[in-house]
Image (cartoon, rainbow, N blue to C red):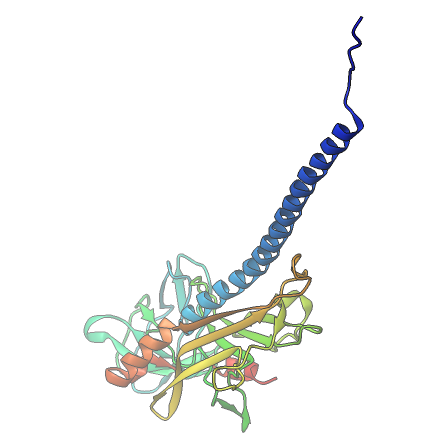
Length: 322
């Protein structure tokens, strides 16, 4: 009677195990590489998302800087009471909004366009913000429309700005801007402070916001951080340091305006790259952000109507100082 041998021989078992080990090694290697790649992508995605959020806000507010508003954009602003004889003298006035919304904000040296047709005139505000006055040449009925045309020429505060004999303008690490940044009738002063650090001690990008009528400027704190892990930018091709903010400055009358802002930020991710075990930094540069309101008023004021270049409010000047 013939015997039938069941199972595998030792040699066959060892060969099968070797093949299984090889296949398992290939699968594990592929899975490891896939996990490293996924970790690297997640790491970079998180870093890019933070930079993108910060730069999108910078673009929006730089583009909107300089906008002047008397109130909600959907409201009409009018004289509260009539302006009557005698004319050619300083008279107090107040403004209404319809429908009621943001209370109109005026300030000394602001240029207002009052009324329509033959009665229309341009006046410069005197007095104070709470008790404004102006010298009127024409009589105006209560309800006559009032507008603040143009924009703040210094909506992006020029680097050469001097306050009480002290430099107080924008710098390579501090961007200062103001205006109706959200087109909602509220005018804000905003400072972006870029603290560049090192790989072992990274810095941060701060955004400090307040109404232009604020009595003082808040100190920087952690709640104002837009972006963590900010590093020193790489030098340019001529080996010169690259600041976070750079400005294209134009002359307007005896002063200057900023018609273009370049933003350069270098950041590193929160976690090391899974493949190399190092923190790989990346640099994002926005080279041509134009503050459209400032550019338009610069173009208009130097060619057609200098009154369109609204003066900087004294309340903003006080906020520029450290």
